[in-house]
Length: 388
Ligand SMILES: *Cc1c(COP(=O)(O)O)cnc(C)c1O
Image (cartoon, rainbow, N blue to C red; front, top):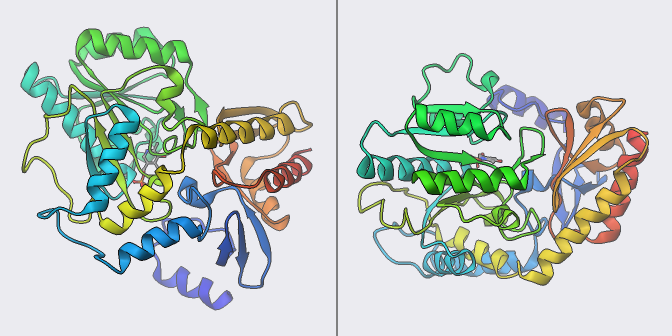
């Protein structure tokens, strides 16, 4: 371990403040360090390993495809890519899918689609994308510009122009900015993940959707973190009763392999033509085969269990000593400590055998969607003890 830490420190770029833990194996929601210590994993690789570590169904799907074709360029057809696009469209009502490799890329495609749509329909001066303060949309220079958190922008100027962020929940500010800047699109997360697990109000989201529809501004919903069952619905927008024009997703979609998807609705279906966008790895057959094995299992019964497990955690922690607030939807949960900093709590929980994340001043829980109830309750009890 100390050797590995030293090598990592010397050779891996300093972009991550790692916890002093090396994970060597796991099964489901339990992971083990090099000394054999067991941890309950409530982070699932930041909401990526939707069915836990080494999930046998996902592993079988991925392994089978690995033995057939591990990669083929997008110049040819492959079955997992077409089947996954079909499944995504059939389950959402969206019309077409562009595949990429990450959340940032899924958002880049959404932004390109909105800009081209507006340029063709209204003119090239309609390029601005409105985003919300405290949002997070990725680390590329364009998705950083979309991210409404100034501290990420410092020293990386100039970012891609054409992004304006407005306070979440303030409909009038959004409308005014949309008209002033000739907005091409509005990009939102229904639950802001990195920004602190802040759940947007239903009335607000519905009003934003109605405004976008009336002004023919594309509504882009970033479901990179909230998507693929995390919120207790297949996509979080479904809990809001809205129909976005474009949905971007990644994280849990591939179950642990890199896969991003941008779902294009009726208005945006034909906006990107041959040569307008592309990705060498996008739609990789192994990643898509894994994703199919995930999506196939996210049926209504399973999603009801996700909602129920979320409620169990809420019941265990809401109003408990040292808990100021519990936020989020489904198994995307924020817990605001009343007495300690979120970072200190997360570090102390490592000692207790629980791996959690932070988001601003909250502890963030993104457990595997199939985490057994007793394991989840055991972890919630340890969190409660630590917060008291
Ligand atoms: C993680 C995240 C992204 C960026 O995803 P990457 O795969 O890291 O590029 C974008 N949007 C949201 C809401 C996210 O949570």
